Length: 114
Image 1 (cartoon, helix red, strand yellow):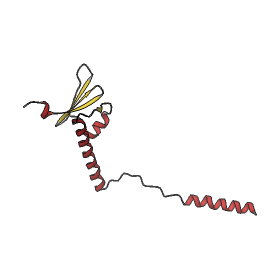
Image 2 (cartoon, rainbow, N blue to C red):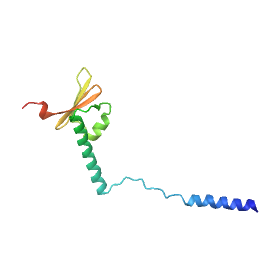
Image 3 (cartoon, rainbow, N blue to C red):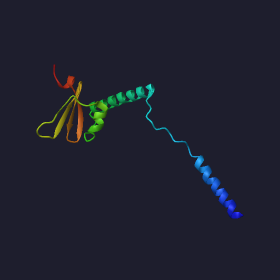
Image 4 (tube, one colour):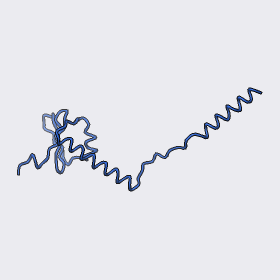
């Protein structure tokens, strides 16, 4: 009789644990107008933070060029001299200079005399 009670309690606990699991969470991306606007705002803030960091002369790793492209977009043109130790990415209002391990931002208005 004891074995039957232990078996019944074990069965109830097992079945109860199965049905008390949390429901599956919907992990589809949120595409509401509000979330899209928020994502665009966060991206523009990230661009400004990166530009500010680079203009203040704070060294940035040139190894992470993918994140730079993600934040600033693709450059209009790229130039790499024959020496191969640097690369320049041209954007509309500025350009980036990748020199060995560091990247720095240059503004056309500051660097090109009128």
